[in-house]
Image 1 (spheres, helix red, strand yellow):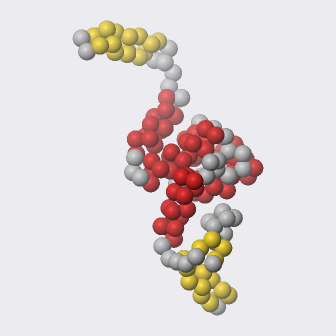
Image 2: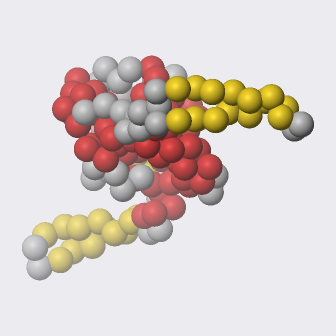
Image 3: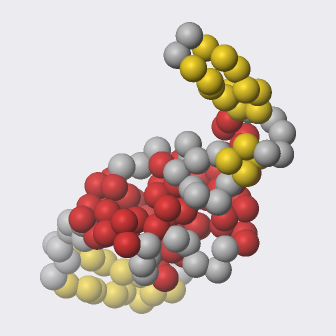
Amino acid sequence: MYHYTSCGLPNVWLKNGYEARRTPYGKAVAIHNLDGLHRTIARTIIAHRPRLSGAEFRFLRKELELSQASLARLFGNDAQSVALWEKRGKVPIWADRLLRGLYRATVEGDVPLRRMIDELNALAERTTTHLTFEDTRKGWAARLAA
């Protein structure tokens, strides 16, 4: 068995699907279908781990190709918080759940979740001073004024 540490997780072992090779620089390992392996690792973490460790959180973030800063923006937080969660392994439960959902939505093609998060973040930049509602033939409707 091969202890696969290059993914950043300390507890991943491969029974097969890899090939040891000699190179002019020493021993190397080639992994078959690396993208498929990483998707399987991610799905297993999401489905079977009660709480994400810092390393697992980092793994999922990287699989989504998000920097700490870009994930922090999505979550309405700062990059330093994300860095501390990953380093210390104390991921808030809300961030744990949101990252799991974001990964599944992205990989399984459910784009509305990502779009909804982006729209919520855009709301933070708007200011609405008056909430006005009007009873119309189709029911109540909001009339928002800046």
